[in-house]
Image (cartoon, rainbow, N blue to C red; front, side, top):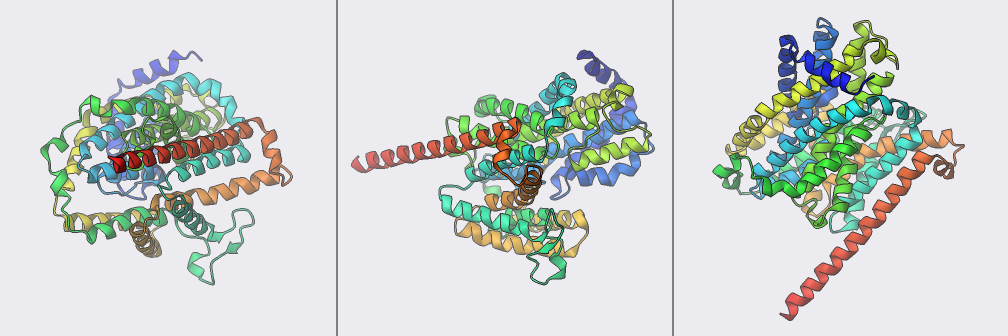
Length: 506
């Protein structure tokens, strides 16, 4: 297939008013869904999937993919303004973006997120067009050992979030991993660590725990503070788009995040969260100011947002090219196509190239739509947090609980989120990283599952992992990044010590 053919076919579809109407509706719904904690692309797809059955396949694909674009951008807005991640991939945006918001730089954080989301989405579409055919064959080589290697890279990123006190950071991560172990054994499906409570035999809902640790804990802490959020965020300049010079240094991180997001998104079992964590870690390693990460770094926001938005295009490579859905949302996309009479597999796009054109057209149209209206949506949210602080806290807590309940419609999940919020509050109070704990919860289950299945595939020998070329390269990369990070941390400590000695002598 000619590389220009998908692009030209996608652009031709943009002349259809029905496609534009579907894209506009999908993008708006996606932004709203992304702003709801716990919603995410999969749940958003599930809510609208029945409507796609009465659409043509082309309009249906464009509609669903525009939702994923909207979610990718929408989850950054509450993450920055309220410290509430719409999904696990937005956890890193909370760390740097919400810190900038509290420092009075809300517009800078939102502006970097806006540019990174659109840039990552747009350039990943071009990469998707160029790589969809060549990368189809690579998906066959990724199995559980290779995915385990990716989660090892994710743990390297987790270590980078440990803060100044590595011991406290790793204790927080260990707590998150232990929470993730509660419930069913991922291999034998035997209940463990339920302590006789029937309600937790299947484990804690990850979304509820993560939202509780990050969002509810922040709301609890804010409720005890006396400052008014409007003291800083009400500055009129905060509603203006920041000048280019303020986020220029984040451009390389956005470029790296786009590349990482597209490639990692194409790997079965990976998705936006590992892509965001890996790109965040790489950006920190390459940054001239690594100490700013976790304390309001525009490079961190740019890398994370570009990666998770670029992963939307990457996920389509094995889904449409091989019929292998790499995430829950892609499973629903294939389900919609199956109902329309398409047979998933390597021949699906070859027999129905209009599906590829619809994917390209839908991604391009939703990106254009966000260019026109995305900043206006962010400014509306910025005005919302300028309300009385007590009102914002109550509304944010209600929205958070609604999002947690919507995942499984279980009241218990709301209780789990509140308890996790209480634990997170005391972690914040005594200097433990709630972000490390939250990522530990998310990574722990998949880390164990891919490790154990990978060991079963290799005669229970971890050494055999290094006989698999791709796994070996990923694991060696994780080790090198870890060593590099330790070296950078040691250099930073030496610089700080030297600076304190010089100031003392002065």
